[in-house]
Length: 410
Image (cartoon, rainbow, N blue to C red; front, side, top):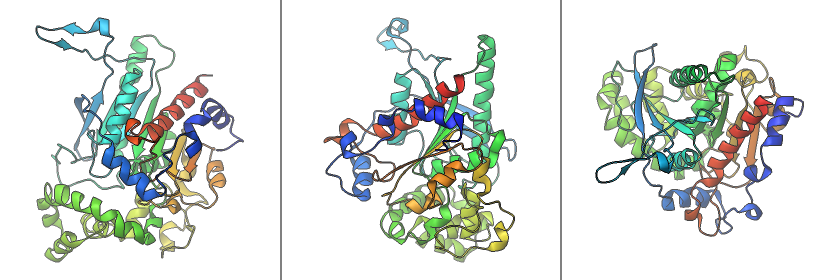
């Protein structure tokens, strides 16, 4: 973090070290010894009970597409529970003093993802309201207006959802004559973290969130282009589900309409997310190439020259970029939580070999929490990881937003 920033220093002072430390000594599972195990085991064993949501809708005025918001309100106190004829029916409440969270889920996910449900369960038990933005066309939603299906470089949907929530919280605070509304924090996972990071960087001073946390999402996805182990081992599993459930299962007519028969056939044969991005996302949305798409998708995608020299970049596309690019425009406290052994999104996607310089960029609003171990959306705890679920990463995100809330109210 930037020690020259008074706000950043105050946030860190309110952010318990125990909440941002992941080692065997602090409770990490000792017998899971690499990123593959720390990623795979949690997804195999963690099963979180279903959470109840209230579905709401907002419209993106730029293309008229409707977006689904799954809202998890905290339950009322036991003494406020309405007793029906045969069973108790809990009432939902909203605590105007607790943080509100906007969640961005992972690729081909939704409010039913296990780690999302884990976060919802923990936060609603604390009295917070949690809102999950369903990526357009994902889960049980459909594209209802035109041909603009989901892609990772679109940040407008996040802005529309965040502004709708912000207006509601402002109105609530005004109605209750509160001098300051409750904090609105964004939390993104994997693909959701990539989009959230990009939104926070691109929106700059116009960001509608008060704080944000990106979990296992790269800042510069161009660095993924040479992460061949991820392409061989992990990406095929994600590719199959995304292609069969979404690209073919729900939106085959969209892709058949815009792609040539040869392009569509190639899309059916891809085995990695990177190749799927080329044959589906790049061709469908008329990006120049994969580097262009990943540049547009990344918070640090306009930085030139990029570090590590792992790919060929087009100098003309970033010749006017500043030293750090749009990441220097971040105007809210923004934490990046990344494990260096992440087998899916490589550590180089942090975008720099000098994390301190990145934290000092711009106004010093970027915080980097880099753990030596943890995997991808993993960080298992204890001898019996199933007992703890995704506690570490979800509590780390919560404690950061709590720290921001305390620091900004001082």
